[in-house]
Each structure stands twice: as C-alpha cells, then as structure tokens.
Image (cartoon, rainbow, N blue to C red; front, side):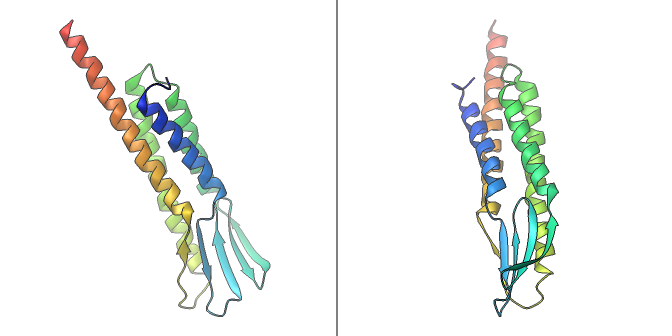
Length: 157
C-alpha cells in the first residue's frame, strides 16, 4: 500500500487538510486598528481593542476539512479497488473545491463586518487546501496510470 506513489500523495493530502484546521485563514484590521476580524476553521471572530465582540461558528469549513481528510484516509485503504479509489478521489476533489469556495464566502462575510477601506489578508489557511487539491489531483493521476497498466497487462494474457 505505502510503496505506491499515490499513497504518499494521499497521505500528504490528509496531513495538509489536518494542518488546515489549526492555521489562520483570513484576517482584516480596521484602518484605526481598533477592530480586528479573523477567520479560522472553527469560527469567524470579531474583536474590538482586544475584547471579543462577536463570534460566528464556521462549522462548514470544519466539516468539509474533516470530510475530505476522512475520505482521503478511506481512499488510501481502498488500494485493491482502483476504480473505487478513483471515484473517491473525484469526490474528494469536489469536497476540497467546496472548502476553498467556503473560505472565500466566509472571508467576504468577515469583510462586511469592517466597513472601511482596509484590505483583508489571507493566511496560510487558503494555501493549504489548494495544496491538498493539487496533491489529490496528482494521486488520481497515478491511480489512473496504475489502472491503465493493469488493463494493458490483462490484454496481453
């Protein structure tokens, strides 16, 4: 199982999605510096002068990250059925893309909380799911390549 290159990519993808849960995703500070809005996988937090004013849970981000990581682990152990593994890989790509879309949605929601012209900044939390999507795509490519090799060897028999 681990000797296959796609298993390494799947493990790295799962690690990236677990790391996503613990890193900051987005933040914005008002022009006067009094109001700060931060986004992580757990909540969208609004603080004013260091005191938390408002929090909104972002359970969707957490659920999509856990779902994609769990599906990646499950796909890792389906190495004997490459077609099922490819199907799980495609579903996982959709989940990670939905995670990226949800990050953008919640950052726009946080942007509305500060009305001045200050710009928000994305942290490593946006980059990690994008890396996970690339790793998943590469793993799917190698799974497909293995399936084609097996099909070619079956024709020779």
